[in-house]
Amino acid sequence: MLGVDIRRLLMAQPDGTAIAVRQIFSAREVARIERAWAPGLPLREALTAIHFDPDGRLTITWRPSREAASPITERISIPSVPR
Image (cartoon, rainbow, N blue to C red; front, side, top):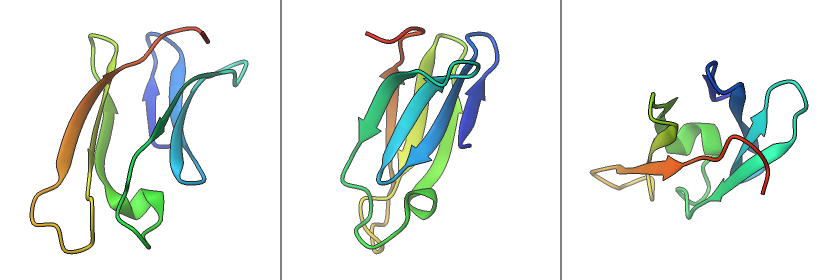
């Protein structure tokens, strides 16, 4: 598991080369995040930080390559239920 939103009962998990955000008890996927993570690195190594914010967004910081001097940070709105 990469992160948990206890208030909305969501969890972020690695799923191959993507981050899958699922409901905790039903495991129904509510969001899938795919990016050009650092080629050749497993997802867990490409991510430098991940957390749910109080406003319901997921903040991820990741490296676009092994040599990248500065990582990329994104804030992504995550729904509570599947679309």
